[in-house]
Length: 212
Ligand SMILES: Cc1cc2nc3c(=O)[nH]c(=O)nc-3n(C[C@H](O)[C@H](O)[C@H](O)COP(=O)(O)O)c2cc1C
Image (cartoon, rainbow, N blue to C red; front, side, top):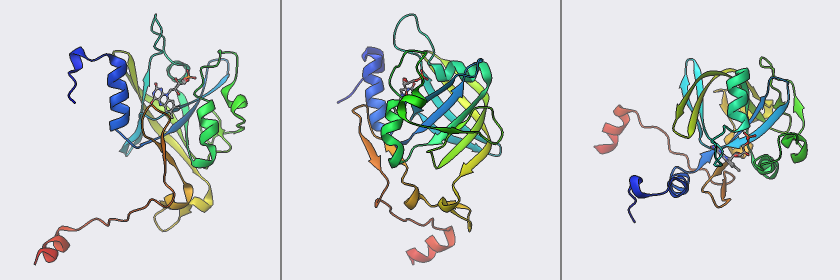
């Protein structure tokens, strides 16, 4: 099938994109409003984009209803400039999904999902205690493009539980962390348990030798 963007409804394009740009890591973002009310929501339009300084990016769509309003996460980041990306692993997947429910503003997703929080190192926004790794971020820039916001966050502190770190790198022991990925809009996710392929990088000299 072929789809022309001009004649394809935006929600169809969304469904195609999220099934094709997959699997995607999931950022469970904690953020706070000006009164210190905590919010948590998952975002899979998420990746890292820079190392020095460390930059991550998150795509946050406006709520579909008219008039267009930003999601609480986007609004909080704009107003307070801080957020935490909590890494989503298999053991917290169900709770993460509860945080995506459109609860009324006065209800706390964090509590309703059964999460608890602990203070972060540098930002006011706490991290999720049940998450095994987290990135503390300050807003670097936000681009508004149509109904989307692309939030770039500068990572100011990193937390990983000790036993998930191989100090030799330091590498993350991905085969033990069990992060999950989002596959499409049908509630499908991928486990990373038992699914590892190791493909070492090939230096050019080695590549030439292999051809001989
Ligand atoms: C796994 C998962 C990934 C999601 N990824 C995104 C995303 O990348 N961008 C987005 O705007 N919404 C995404 N959502 C929907 C938001 O989590 C949902 O709209 C949430 O209610 C927003 O909460 P907030 O208003 O508290 O920010 C995702 C939902 C799930 C379950």
